[in-house]
Amino acid sequence: MTDPKGQNDNSASPEQGAEPVVSKPYIMPDDPEEGSVEALAKELAEARDRTLRTLAEMENLRKRTAKEVSDARSYGITGFARDVLDIADNLQRALDAVPAETRELADPMLKTLIEGVELTERSLLNALEKNGVKKFDPTGEKFNPNFQQAMYEVPDPSVPAGTVVQVVQAGYTIGDRVLRPALVGVSKGGAKAAPAEQQS
Image 1 (cartoon, rainbow, N blue to C red):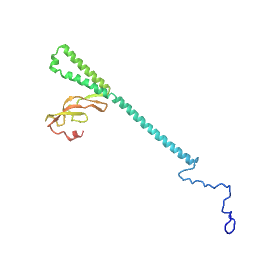
Image 2: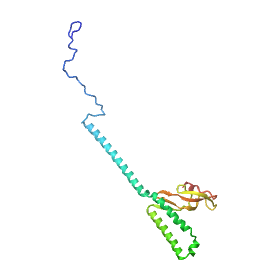
Image 3: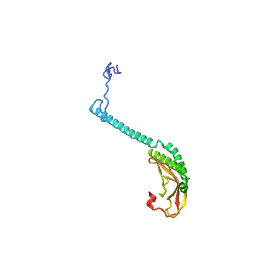
Image 4: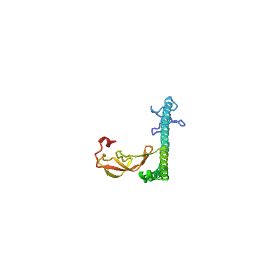
């Protein structure tokens, strides 16, 4: 190429066919080169971390599954047990319908019938108890809304107010849960319960 002064300017143009020079990319100190000891150590640490996290997740899953299986065993019969409680209630009502004086004076056939109903009720309650269902009677205890349902108040100055004095229908628990609260009559008009009792 010739400039206006007539001189050739070949020194400024690159040679034809020469490869362009590419500079090597800068590697951050935190990001070691592939294949280096630091890179392999970093990959090993990441793999170890992933493995430990996976093991922790699997252990948590195992514990959750074990709890679900335990709950299924303990509480799987809840619906069935609620249905059976009606039968237990009817057996109890049948026994309560016969006054004590009538039982003593009853003829042998009626006594045998009453004993059969009592035996059936005991057998049913034992079968329920084997499966984690327990009957409870809160008579004399301080009223607890978690386990009892108050149906009415009974004026009774001889016991502290808020005490269960009558049980209309027995309560049942299954495991550590309430299957059915007890239906109760609660005292009123008596002395206030002690502060320690109120907190419990």
